[in-house]
Each structure stands twice: as C-alpha cells, then as structure tokens.
Image (cartoon, rainbow, N blue to C red; front, side, top):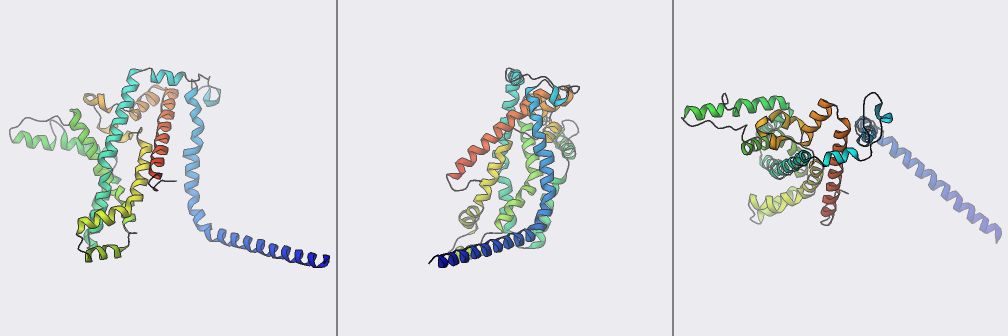
Amino acid sequence: MKPHMETKKAIYQQAAAVRTKEERLRRRRRFNMNVPLMIMFAPILVYFITFKYIPMGGLIIAFKNYNLADGILHSPWTGLDNFRLLFNSPMMLTIIKNTFFISVLTIVVSFPFPIILAILLNEIRRMFYKRVIQTLVYLPHFLNWVIVGSFIVLIFAQEQGIINKLISALGWEKIQFLYNKSSWLSIYLGSGIWRGVGFGAIIYLAALANIDPSLYESSSMDGANKLRQIWHITLPGITPVIILMLILSMENVMDVGFDQIYVLKNPMVSDISNVISVWSYEVGLGRGQFSLTTALGFFTSSVGLVLVLVTNKIARKFDQGLW
C-alpha cells in the first residue's frame, strides 16, 4: 500500500512539474510576443517618470521657504505658512473663483462640440470630402496660441480690426470686443473651440467606428430617420467614451491653460482673466516666489484629484466608471 501511495505521489509531482514548466513556457512566449509593444511603450514610460513622477519630489517646496542658494533639501521648513498666506489673501480667492468659473464654463460650452463634429463627419459618405473637412478642422490645433492671438487681434481689434472696420464703414459705432468682459469671454471660448474641436473629435470618431453598421441598417428598415438613429444608436454607442472624457476633463477644472489666456488678456479684463496659471507665472517666475506657487499648484492638483474621484464614483453608479 505504501509503495502505491509513493508512486501516486510521484506521478502528481511529475504532473505538477510539467504544468509548471508549461506555464513558464507560456509566460516566456507571451513575454516574447509583447517585446515589441514594450519597446514602443518604453519612451512613454521614461517620459512620465522623468517629467511627471520625479518632479513630484519638488512638492516639498510648498512647505518650505525655498531659495536657490540652499536648494530644495536645505531650505528652511515653514509648515503650512505658505498655504495660510495664500488663502488669507482676498485676491487669491478672486483668482480661484475666476479659474473655476472659466474652467467650468469652458467644459460646459466646448465639451459637446467634438461630439457633434465627430457625428457630422461620420455621416459624410464621400471619402474625398470627408478627408478635406477633417484636414481643415484639424489644422488649427497645430497653430501656436501666439499665432491664433494675432488672428484674433486682426479680426476684433477696436481700431484696425476687420469687423470694426466694416462696422465703421456702415456708419455705426465701433465695438470694444477685446475690452468688454462678456465679449472677451465669448472670444476666449470661441477661439478655444475653433482650435481644439477638430483634434478632440478624433477620439469620438474612433468610438463611432466600433458601432455595428447592421444596427443602422435595421433601424432604417424600421423607418428610423437620421436623427433617431443618432439618438438611439450613435449616442448610446459612444456614451462610455463621452463619460471617460468627462471624467478626465474634471482634472483640469482648476487649471485654465496658460497660453491662451495669457495671449488674449489685457488690463481692461483683468478682473476675469486673472487666473491661477497667469498668477503662477507672474509671481513664481517673475518674482521668484516658488514656494507660494508650488503651494497653490499642490492645492489645485488636490482639487482636481478629488473631482476625478467623485465624478468616477458617480459614473460607476451607471456602470460607466473609469476604474
């Protein structure tokens, strides 16, 4: 009986060894198959480690009185003094309010446009026209904001702007487009949409390509027109992507892009154009107050993280969360 048990145990051990060897071979084969992908991913990994993760160590500047002579490690600690100094300033509350207002307004106004453009492009059946239109709407994304700002001044300037010249030729009074808060805000939003809508539509076009064409054929046979197909097939088909992009956009609620607002701002609209990114540039780099700007950056990043987590938790209730 005992030799039989030992034989049976040896067979099990041998079988286990064979399974282990086969598993190692599968892992090695899978690893070899993924080597090209890992090589392609390596530069991205290096980029994020170098420019995203390593700089996180500099966050300790927010809790120090940083100076170049002592460096990051040897500058004296100040605890939460930088945060107290920031949030005890009435001007800082105005800056945060302006940033939040412009960011939320930008998301609300501009978020639907890439979706609409992607749906319209998807309905074009002639590939030549589709490619031409795609190229035209993508091109603005590759223009620097300095160039875009020059176009805006050329069009909306009070004295030499094209629109005001036409208004003056008609005998009407010129309009201060760039010096009135409401018109400046409209120009800010419109220029952002014009520059980014084409590039933003790429993701939605990719999502639209994954919708089964037979759904459109079936709905057409049932008498559904284009609007009903878009409402009942297209939009539900890209809803996960829409929610994903909405969650990611929450990260930038406290981060208005520096380039656009810095190019378009002027003293007449400083009450609304004075935002966190501009203040950080002027105070941090202009005046050397690195500790204050780092503390503010730490605060805005924390707010963005909380908003992303909250938005994702809400989306998960509808089975559409990012994770």
